[in-house]
Image 1: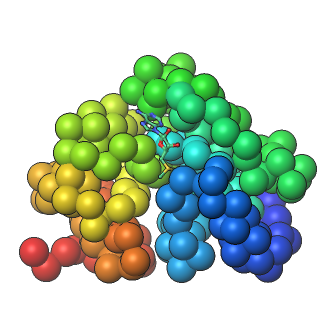
Image 2 (image 1 turned 180 degrees about the horizontal axis):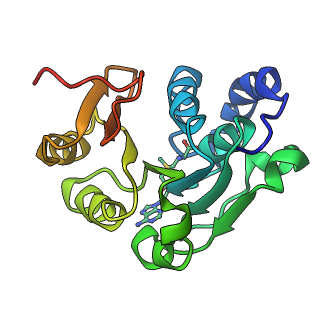
Length: 188
Ligand SMILES: C[S@@+](CC[C@H](N)C(=O)[O-])C[C@H]1O[C@@H](n2cnc3c(N)ncnc32)[C@H](O)[C@@H]1O
């Protein structure tokens, strides 16, 4: 595990500040959602992300101790550039998830890695992102389960995974092969 960075209080403040720049921000997770994501990421050494946007969720994963690989074919300004100690452990890859991932994940680190799927939210794209992730990660977090396509993908995942859907403002889905304290079987 990499060192946890002492910037949590600062990045809580970053959200409202940066969210004011509405013209360049696309659909950030809320602070509450970031806390849930960080709680998962803390269990792992590596955090792989589909959908960097402005790097807000990547910043949180780096802050709680992960080495981060984040993929997005649209290169925007990154909020983690304000935090050099976080930035040095984040690798941004200017590529789609499915194309880029196989070049960065491997058998050696896959057991120490989780992933976050937060790209396009329609069913077909969310399904493709899940299919690219499935061979590699035993814990996968989805953002925007309130978008029907993402929820449909989460519900279609086999019951060999524990699943939980948390009704945050945009919805978080966690699927895991591990029975970790934060993962409980879904009731659906
Ligand atoms: C909701 S934003 C990500 C927000 C970010 N995870 C956060 O919370 O700070 C979605 C991003 O996914 C990107 N995206 C769309 N399809 C993608 C794909 N196939 N692979 C990687 N990124 C993708 C979009 O360009 C967009 O920037």
